[in-house]
Length: 297
Image 1 (cartoon, rainbow, N blue to C red):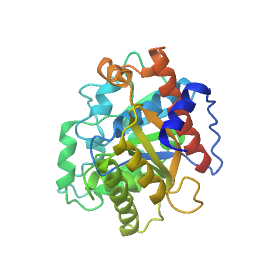
Image 2 (cartoon, rainbow, N blue to C red; image 1 turned 60 degrees about the horizontal axis):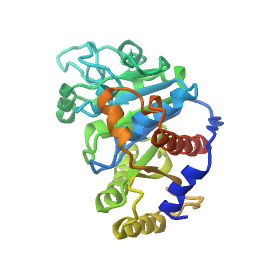
Image 3 (cartoon, one colour; image 1 turned 135 degrees about the horizontal axis):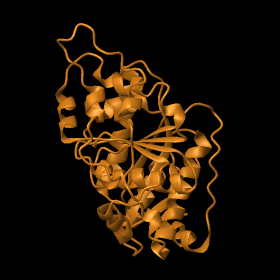
């Protein structure tokens, strides 16, 4: 089924959330691509908004120093951010054990967001961690979530697009699953291809088993047909067969491009509060995406 058939299906069919992970343990989902502009943050907060509307307890971890997810979630100037969790004073002979420390940094999302959405906020200083050579820094996020992630139905990590970076590695080590958004163009295609390589290498270099890759999510799709979009839709389907039992697959859903998504980000409220026809179609797209996560979780 091509992407335009999927978008038509959103208009014709309601979608029920089927969130019943069966493998046990928390679902920690890294949203990643090695290209910017593919909508990672929009997917992260969009999934949080839809999950929360359906009663899921959601934690968003913002690992991008630009703090776009943090801002959309209505959090400004956090006193204790994810940067503080990752920082280690190299001169301290007795550094604090990071296990469970995330609990001290978690904040409720801002006014307008449901009270079952929480945030581990980012700040610009987080960019310094990319150049931090302190031993064990990349492991601290994973350890800080020990005993904390279990309090949530879904933990979402917004990962910056730096290839092979330390923040990407921290996300790869902390996550249990990965979702790769792709716009239908060259950047979207390359971002998925290179992102999968980086995720595998990060886990392998630290002696961890590979992540469960939920799949590739076609994102910010213009409803108007274009030759470029059709070409890359076909390329993604060939590279990541939708019904392949092995390896990453192209998900049987797509997220349309609607201005309500940008408007809600600027207003720092969930798009689900808009109550418009466009918001309903976006909700269905994200709901289908959550169902894809639940199928492998």
